[in-house]
Length: 292
Ligand SMILES: [Zn+2]
Image (tube, rainbow, N blue to C red; front, top):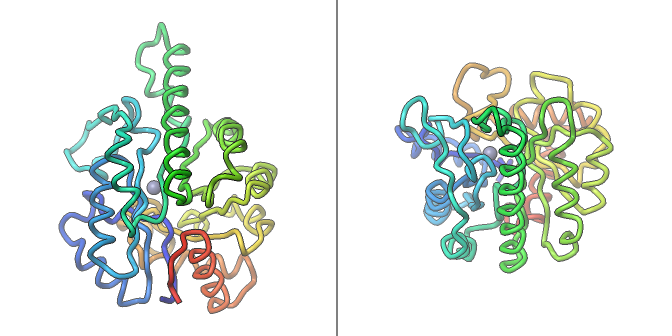
């Protein structure tokens, strides 16, 4: 393999029509990927893809926005506009079976998403109370993922999105994670958007960070990326979302991780070849897989 996309969703409805072609051109370019589940169907489908193709692996879990009624994107499950999350309850039996599959190499995406909570709390009169309840539910489900990750000795793939211009969800995630960190085989913080101070606290827990297409069209994360050691960095597409430059406006897909790698090599001032070597090695270490 030449590169690895550590967080992608090629099992989503956005790839329904041409999934096999997308996978074929990804593997042909020497790009492997980790297909990340967000609820029971997308977790199941990710495991099926991982069992079908070499160099494709799965992560399984229940995304925090799917633990309560919330905004939902039809690119994920289809169903046209106006689809809302079905408030899935974490079914331990279902997720444990998927977690035990040998092609499953991480638990998630799981974590906390406070970004859209105020929009999800529909009842204005009890908004504050509703927001608190949503946060509590997200925290409970996150702890269930931590327990599962410990049971099967696989790393956590964390989604953590604070409310606007705060670090609130990171604060809560750190508080929950810290007492478990020593018992976890690894922690990955996907799509990191926090401050350097927050990054340092995660690094004390031995965490890895993924960065995606966003680094190709904003400089907001340059300083954080420069300060994080190369040994802690992974790259991703988060396809079908957040398409990197120069493909903006198109659906994202795993081969565009090459464009993320190019920008990362500039930021880390490493030749692309050396950057790729680091990326493959980091994925091998955290996910326990063989890519080289
Ligand atoms: Zn994702």
